[in-house]
Picture 1 (cartoon, each protein chain N blue to C red):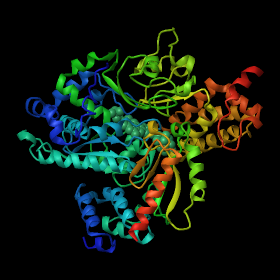
Picture 2: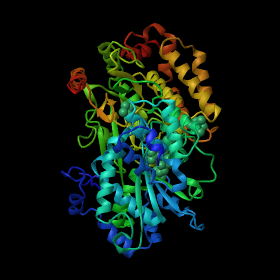
Picture 3: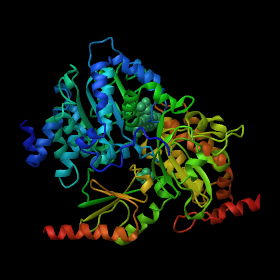
Picture 4: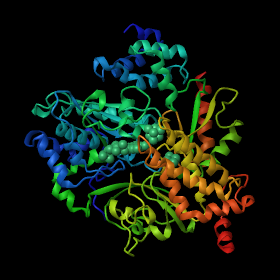
Length: 451
Length: 171
Ligand SMILES: Cc1cc2nc3c(=O)[nH]c(=O)nc-3n(C[C@H](O)[C@H](O)[C@H](O)COP(=O)(O)O)c2cc1C
Ligand code: SF4
Ligand code: FES
């Protein structure tokens, strides 16, 4: 049984009530941190823990905090990124619904470390029901003196607010999030300046994912060194994985980093294997933005070792044969799923969500959607596959924010690993289209017979 | 805040608007725009008229265009009339491979409308939306603030029936 640092208390009845949470040891980190530790000592523990940002990029949290510009007398801000819109990702919602006080406790510790006296949780607008739970929990924390002026007589003041978005994936990108919090369209900013120097209202700002901030609580309670003992190499600690697709038990799981991908999919403790007795065909291990992997690359690294659930192991082989841990949005496909259809679906998503500022992204995502739609519906040509490859290549690296890359990578990986399916669509247009738009399982088989 | 009256919203909503504005520095009122639009839209039959948006602009001391560009950028704001209940079906990858297309077809047939349309009685608008963060509980849709997950045709029937009967008993 894996240990749980974040979700340990998740299934305790009424744990959303502050008294229940406190009676199970909740908020005990505050006494220690606010009274016995300096802000820099907290940052030091977070550095020691090796915690890497859980929002997708995996950048060292402690290092990021140390970039915060403390030389000005402007206020500093901590923003929690609860936008969670990456397809396949629903772990932050789970954490906030189950343990709203864990996030608040983490926000207090982190705000203290960074010297933020006003912090915001930016939550996607569709999660209004979660926002209400958070606001209730925040009220409770105020009434206990954990928020507000002079928290626990430490001299530290903190106001904490929840700010809803309104339906835009791009607002998860940290500078778009800041724009959105300022009441504007979510157009990412050109960096530099980085938010740590000039962020919300031009002030030094740190943006961190929900899970990253929650992880600060066990790090302070047990010490950074203890946290770093869990995991493998530079992937320390535990990670929340949200598993979806054609598996027996979709849901959110806290894993020790380092378990094998195979164990995660087939063990009863986690996904419980494939549904309906079907075979696994492919997996997108870190949210829709990361490369899709076919079965034969999913379980093994290029040297034959087992592939593991860590940042390093999932990306081993680069984009030739690897993927990324990303946000932990783990999507599993069975043998009946059509890769072209899925790729078209994701391309449509990115086209819809592009903010439209840079032409490679705005136009390129539209081109990819249209070409893929044609191929999927039996109207594509061999040249279209080539064109698609070219379009994704022209987007990658040529845009203001990483949404462009996020749109290009899944298309590139699908062509790289499943070119035969694209060609099949082009060769046998009459077979790939039925009235219900569902996938014909014989496609794969027939193709292999004809090559 | 006299401008609040022009918004003609309930006292409770006005109280909420006031509370929200107080969450940002006094010279950064514009930051309250997204949350305020949510509250106002809830009070104005689920969509925003030009007049409403102009009043929000006055309230937050910004220009009308600053409100329009936000209202048109974000998918949760409606600038045209919508049905009493907006059914928002997630159509993104993980939901698609677990049956969201069938769900959409079922709803289209059952309601007698296509995606993007509203039933003639004004009860339901059918929309498709992108990933709602419920991928493990697919297929699913959202109506108002509520998520309905792991949907089957029977469940859909029950949900729509209960929404209909709740409305008729209100009249
Ligand atoms: C298009 C796009 C969408 C993103 N969406 C999210 C998101 O929903 N949640 C999140 O935490 N980070 C998201 N990120 C990453 C953030 O920009 C940022 O790196 C992250 O919030 C930093 O927090 P962390 O260091 O704790 O991971 C997104 C990035 C991009 C480019
Ligand atoms: S890459 Fe796309 S989403 Fe990002 S700033 Fe450019 S147009 Fe907007
Ligand atoms: S894909 Fe439907 S909720 Fe995520």
